[in-house]
Image (cartoon, rainbow, N blue to C red; front, side, top):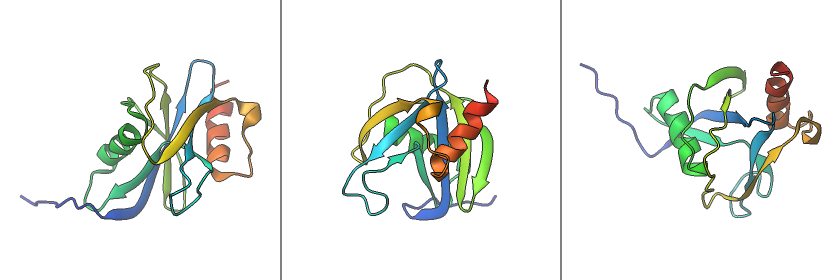
Length: 130
């Protein structure tokens, strides 16, 4: 039996989840100003998978940590560099953001900017759900 050790160290792989509500809007989180990268920007839920962690479990963990949501049936959407994008339906449960973010909002398709990599992937999902 091979034992895999999971560490607290982040790997380079990142899972991002495009959570879509019943009104075809995408959940975005506003990053806190204290974070090292992309402070104050809108982001998709998700984050770095830990070294040795199962990717699927890490994706679920990251979304839970950032939103307090349990996602179900995530579907792979695409990959950009070290980012893996998935999508799933919003459960309707209350969102409780972590200290990593200062707010959240559901964005309509017309409010997303295709020049932004996260928005671009969200638009790909929304355009496929029409």
